[in-house]
Each structure stands twice: as structure tokens, then as C-alpha cells.
Length: 179
Ligand code: IMP
Ligand code: MG
Image 1 (cartoon, helix red, strand yellow):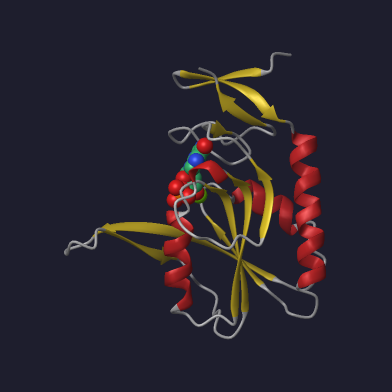
Image 2: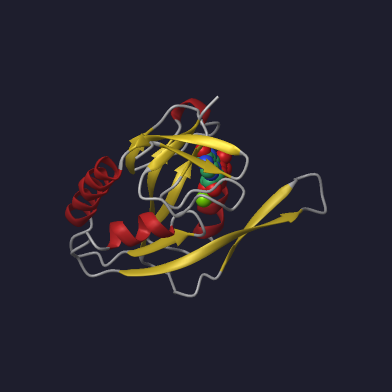
């Protein structure tokens, strides 16, 4: 079987096989099980990209917990402050509860920085970030990322929930864009 896939007009090659992904997800889940014992965290998975990661992560969580799914909506600001992101669908009350944000990938970090700011208005007792992937070379803001499964180079990737123009989310492995 070829290790390459075509997604729309682009070709991608396998860069992180399923076995590697799942072993890193298990490692991070074990850290959360240990750190959050007795705390009943609320996992907040950011749609769409994190749906596969969240499903695998949650099945490795053995402590009592809840999960909810949110979306980040972007609005054009009326002032010069630019783009404002709001959290859509925060259906669980996080007041005085520990929250773990579940994200597919942190690139510039701007999305997570906005998410943290907005979430803090809902008065959680604490917030930690749990990301499947991090591109350290692209990070533009100072972010404390407590849980990270894997760090990757600055390449564009798809698969395991991540998309290229809406496509390519439905693969077990992660693929990197070929030049
Ligand atoms: P940030 O605000 O720059 O950190 O962007 C984060 C978001 O950009 C992620 O939640 C993804 O939806 C998207 N993203 C960043 N890098 C990639 C990639 O390599 N493939 C697919 N989506 C990406
Ligand atoms: Mg995302």
C-alpha cells in the first residue's frame, strides 16, 4: 500500500503512523489521570479538528470527567482591535471547575490565546491546554501548554481529524504535505 494520499489538489505522505499517535495519546492520558485524580475535570474539545483526538483521549481517561464540544466563531470587530473569537456552544457550566481544553494543533497559538481569554470570563477554577500537536517554530504568543502529545516541524499536515480545506480528516495516520 502506498504511503501517499491525494487530498483535493495536493499530495501528502505519511509522517506519523497510527501506532505512534495512539501511544502518545495514552502517555498524555496517563498524565491527566494522575494530575487530575479527585478533581472531576471538564474536557472542552474544540471542533472540528479535535474530534478524533478527543475520542481516543477520552477512552484512556479513567477518572470521573465530563466532555463538551465547542466551536470558535470569528467576528470582524467594529473597532481597530480586529478579530474577536467567541466560544460557541459552551453548554456545560464550568464555574469553579477545572477545564482541560482539547485541541488538535497549536500553530501560531493565537487561537488558544483567545480561547483562554474568553474561557476565563466563565470563571473556571483552572484551565490547562491539551494539544495533540504543537509546531514550536510557529508559536507567536507565550502559551503554557501543559499537555502535548507531539511536536512537529512547520509543515502543513492532514489526517486524524485535521483537514485541508475541509477534506482529509478521515485517516488513521497523520500526513505531511509533499513539496
Ligand atoms: P493557530 O491559531 O495559528 O494556533 O491555529 C490553530 C488552528 O489552525 C488549528 O486549530 C487548526 O485548525 C489550524 N491548523 C494549523 N496548522 C495546521 C495544519 O498543519 N494542518 C491543518 N490545520 C492546521
Ligand atoms: Mg483547531
